[in-house]
Amino acid sequence: MSPETHTPPRIGDIAPDFELPDSQGVPQKLADLVAAGPRIFIFYRGHW
Amino acid sequence: MAEYRDLYDEIQKEGAGLTALSIDPPDRSEAVRRQLDLPYMILCDTQRVVVREWGVFNQEEKGGIAKPAVFVVAPDHRVKFQSVDQTATRVPARAVLDFLRTGMSSHPAEPVRKSSFPSVSNFWRATLNSVRYGVRSTGK
Image (cartoon, rainbow over all chains, first blue to last red; front, side):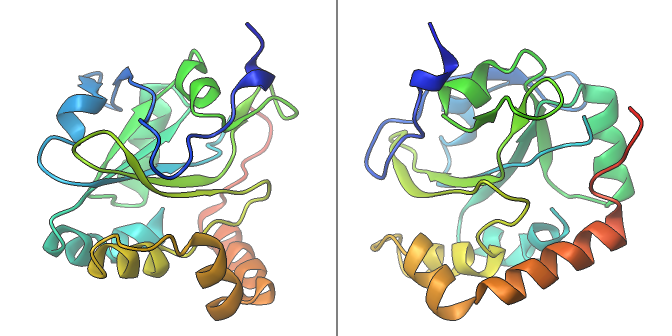
């Protein structure tokens, strides 16, 4: 699997599912995050 | 990040949530969250799995980082808004808020940014932010 084959989901696509820890180590699932309403996801470069 | 912090209350009033994501580890993300006094959570994709699957992985820099990008995902998991950038700039938070306010009925990302927010102002905003918050730290 090459990472280059992935393109960003388009409008109307199903967002790829995930579970990730937040900055306090608490696991967060996409399904839970969007359950109550639309959610903005900001991807940022970070400090490396 | 701070731009969204400043609009957080208004975003919540629209019934929407807000989450940030980078490849930084939790301790570093938590430091950023405290430093900028962010009221929203930061997710930590240290394995670069989600940034790859969401098509926003920039492997040209420093072992691979996230491209600046914004998505709005609805409760049915469908993407309602999408803006992916190659540079340090991103779609203005105000434009995303306006999108929520109009009932997520249109896809404004490119038109809104181009018509209402000239690239010069984006560049200036990014420059100001990097000066103010030291977005790109060095030496790590």
